[in-house]
Image 1 (cartoon, helix red, strand yellow):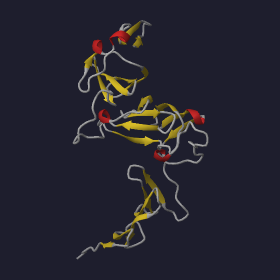
Image 2: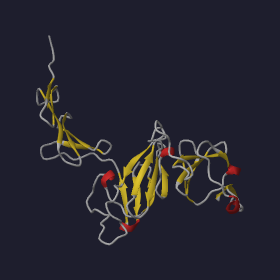
Image 3: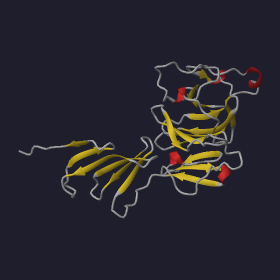
Length: 270
């Protein structure tokens, strides 16, 4: 059950009743239910969306939302008895995704929902659901071995991209007011934080910007011009960009791909 303590110290039941164990029934594959029709199975965590004040609940392997009009719906994950969505559906929708043992959830001030998933073995990750209802990876790479087995190293001491980092038994996630995401990496005995930072310039006064979504590194010179694109995983250069003059007024003149093919840009100033 979900129970609430109001400002006067009065405890009331929001969802559920003491008879739910003998009357439990699965949630529908689509649509919503009234509060009276919902019987939770194993609720473990709560969060409130700051944009609309709706309550979100981890129950078993799903995220449920209690709407302001008193109805409950699934916003992430699918009931086990429901078939996978047919081809043609948007597989990025959180309601079509399979959650692996969700442990914790937290909202950012912008309304993005972060979900910690962990089976303590190969899956230890954070995924994020945007306000458009689509789910995507945020932090944690799938392990190539079982983190519970001796000899399986599920930690890296150096700082890495969040999407490539290794975690071991994620127990909690929260978002601080500055937008930083903090992760309880339980089996590694650490609290780890994900934050955006302005990169330092290299010796050659170049800046590298990482894009986990595209698995690319964008390199800019001291004038803010994009001069190269590299693959994060291989380190190979995908594109090289050159400019007509080496100043902030430089105009793009050539683009060269990994195979050496070039595109020249000619401008008519007449």
